[in-house]
Image (cartoon, rainbow, N blue to C red; front, top):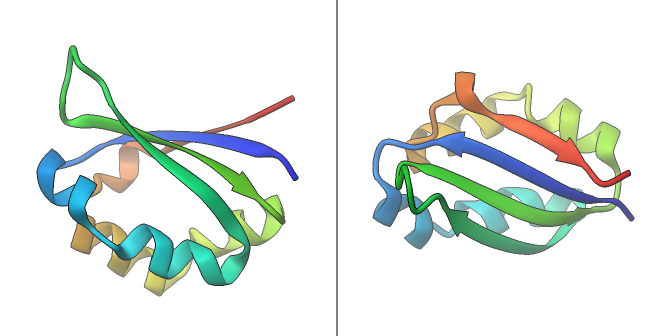
Length: 87
């Protein structure tokens, strides 16, 4: 199971940190052990480290309306999302 790091910008860091959406949307597709991070130099840049059961499934899911809706709810700026996969 690969570990994945993702980072992106958000509109409101406190809202993003408090949101339950990550577990709600990622849990059913096999993403576990989600940890959140905030860039101290640019607090609206945030990140996640997570264990991903199926990377293809995650990539496909990120293109769906439920993923877009969750990002909108959390204030994620979708054009800034970057995934890095442990090699």
